[in-house]
Length: 218
Image 1 (cartoon, rainbow, N blue to C red):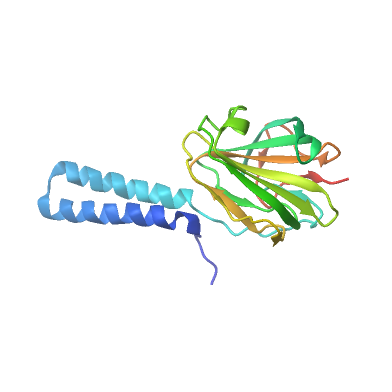
Image 2 (cartoon, rainbow, N blue to C red):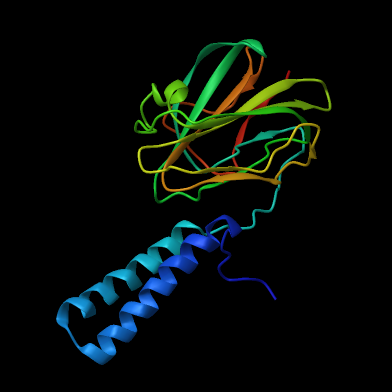
């Protein structure tokens, strides 16, 4: 039977914590009948629904050729600029901003092998700001596809987000559309590809993980 609403495992602990708090508040409001406890119960129930919505985890069916570099995240393209990456060299960096209304799951854009993964605790500027790219909490994952093309995916925390979940480990072989990770509460995802990469998107475009074609390796 197909699930109507799928919850990301990364959110189970947070959802359970909010659920327990709501149950406690609801029981107190039922027995003590203090108005402020009733308001607290309503607030916690609303927050529980919002939290469940935030941690939704849709199952995406890939409809394109596996040679297409698919978007690793939902959001809006806020920047496309030249970059000099220490692992890739002359490259292009494509930044995707994820608002609190976007799905916060990330997916692998191509069949590839994980070369390495690095975490930097960093700071928490707004994810829509360019300085978040280098200064914020982030995970940087270097991949190599079957044609020996290198690319990076960076998970960057935002002002609200304080927790990055990364499922990629060195030497792991991944298929296009696998779950790469999850960023909790507002964030930014960046794609770093060689300068020769054929980009199909533009600044300002809305993209959808596993659906939008970012481009192709030439």
